[in-house]
Image (cartoon, rainbow, N blue to C red; front, side, top):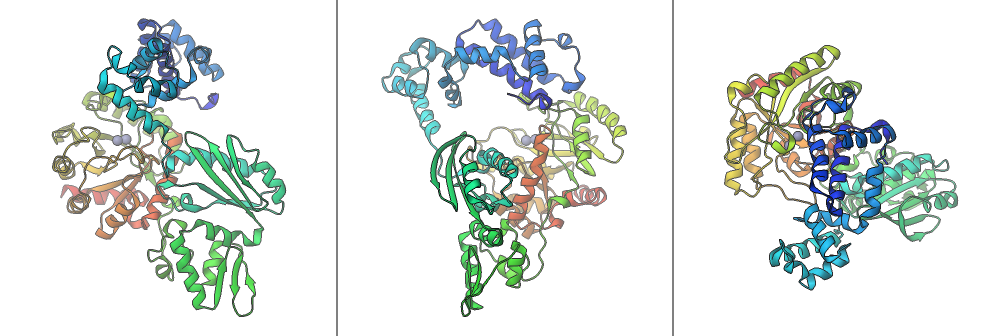
Length: 577
Ligand SMILES: [Zn+2]
Ligand SMILES: [Zn+2]
């Protein structure tokens, strides 16, 4: 159940919506269902943080019943209403909600009229054309459902970074608590910050492999044990996808070389081995062997390992045999998390975020940031409770109040402004000039032609107030490709107009990707790494964002949110010249 202390407004909205879905599946009366939806909606539009709400009944749209559910959840972190519903509605129905076009209402009908309770039932009903015969469905929607079912079953060959993040975190927490684990690290493509991974690899230094092995086999959610030797344990962990995880246990003196070996990439390792061979040496997992004498040298860190070959430490993110060995003969510092001075894209309860402006300021200040931009959605984006001119002006007053509380933090009053399908912007220049920070973003009409998309982007970039373009391609890794951007043109235009491009650090997006930001840097285009945070936790995505930036070889100078506010302001001025 939810961690009581960490409950935020989004969790409550989610709970209310979940209850509504279950009620719908159960076939409850529409008034009851709509009461939960209304309450969720009311909370979504209320701009206060959870801690600021003391009288729930004063919120229009929240009745006695829903208020009871909310208070119970807040006090206990649980909801009996939801738990009871979960017992009444077949478990197998819930995953079916992920099928496109199959909402609660339709699914309820399938459940009630065709007794469909799970994937297999639905598959059979479609194949027998029972679904097509059902009122409100038809042949077309039956075909769609069948196609959707296929996607539902499919485990992709490579899993999106974000899809395995949780499994990785749980394992790292468990490893940290094992007292016979001397040190450990993630390896493989996840360590190199690839956007998709085949499996997870962990390297563990231990003197007690048998003990650690037994503990590994006790990890949560193990679906299958593939191998359990004294040097290697392989398991499949059941999560949203099945995730294969390999653990390699070695002595501490071989940790650095084993880690290097299993971090890869394969091509990087080949290049390193050639380098060694030319010196009469051989690299293995256990160290570096002098071919003539047979003597093996071990290292206490990867840094020492690289130094042995007269190289500066090559960051895992660039170990792809793309010139790193040549480059790192000299120091070549890439941007680090410590360089980051602020975050220029985040949401609050004023649009679709979970936390108030004050809370976001508090978290940013705890992180030691010098500046942040509050950039809630603009009015076009109704689903996200986007702000119009009037509400943005009201928000600015609130920002002004919060500024007094955090004098060391500069809070920019901004907006993530929609670029409309016809290419116009959601606000006119008279209004935009009132704001400290304007982001241009596309959230609609993804299927437009490249020409239409580029016209929209160009319009935003030519606007003197638009400082950066958010998530420039709109892709969601493994889910959607985004709209048709001509990237060369975009980069060229960014250069001409001094518009900054975003590296959206949300692991679902990583947009722009590491290849494009590399090209940006080569072309002299500046990048801003932003979390696009909608809650406290997601402010932490900066770490992943910096990882992608490093994978794109970005240096500190390219990343504008490593600059001081004064440097930033000087750059923004260029736009208006
Ligand atoms: Zn956005
Ligand atoms: Zn956003």
